[in-house]
Amino acid sequence: MWQMQRMVGAAAMAAAVMAPNAVSAQALSDQWQFGASIYGWLPDIHGNTTFPAGGSNLSVSASQIIGNLKFAGMGTFAAQKDHWGVFTDLIYLDVGGSKSGTRDLTVGNVTLPAGVSANASLDVKSSIWTLAGSYRVMADPGSSFDVFAGFRSIELKQDLRWQFSADIGGIAPPPRSGGSEAKINNIDGIVGAKGRYAFGANREWYVPYYVDVGTGQSDLTWQAVGGIGYTFSWGEAFAVWRYLDYNFKNAKIEDASFSGPAIGVAFHW
Image 1 (tube, rainbow, N blue to C red):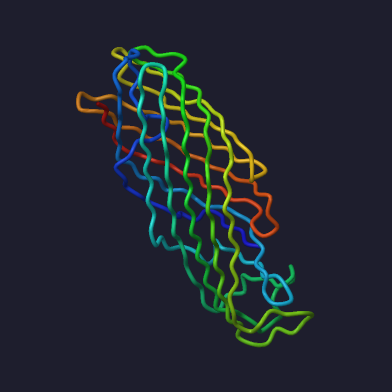
Image 2 (cartoon, rainbow, N blue to C red; image 1 turned 60 degrees about the horizontal axis):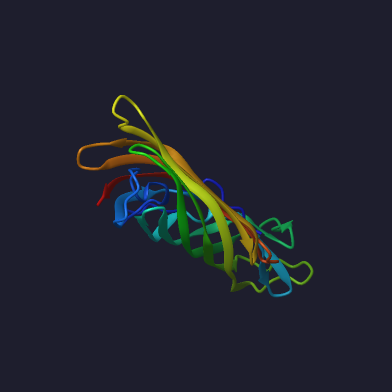
């Protein structure tokens, strides 16, 4: 079982629409309205996974192994016409790292014997896609409130490679060197709400917000986004905190969460 804590896992700049800021708040229109933003998200990644390894299970503290971003990409798009809208959000993460001479592994929940260490590497790949239709309950020149329903899919794959410095002995030990993987591919229905609240003398400041919850092939998934933004003559700038959490119905991958700040600029037409 691995525990990933405080691992800065992804920094991405993408031409996209941040879900809570997808379309600027304004009076309802029978014309299509669109929005786009460029933003970066830097989440910590946490999770618990059991890797089968021969006759036993290997447990790894991933925070001691992973520290390198290989690739990350994030983007969303949204459109609004009158009360009805649609938005989609895609996140792709590829992170990995390795450590030599580590003892941050356990075998069958037992620490390594004295004098034994390991070279270990761990790669985590994840793609998360959200698609939903929305209904605008409230809109004025500065604020909006939408409810929505849709689905979110997640494909998560983790690869562990190891090589022990000596035979570790014990009952049903794993091979002295080898690899193992754990993966999951789930689709869950979600419902939620999103919008923004404007304030200031000219309503130039605003608070974006987004929350969803769902279930299906997962026990539970939920997401929350909130922060602050400012409107300029050319567009908007915003800073938010984004948290995405999963509890799985899976014996290998128990849970996963992504949490961190995002900043960017937005344009609307």
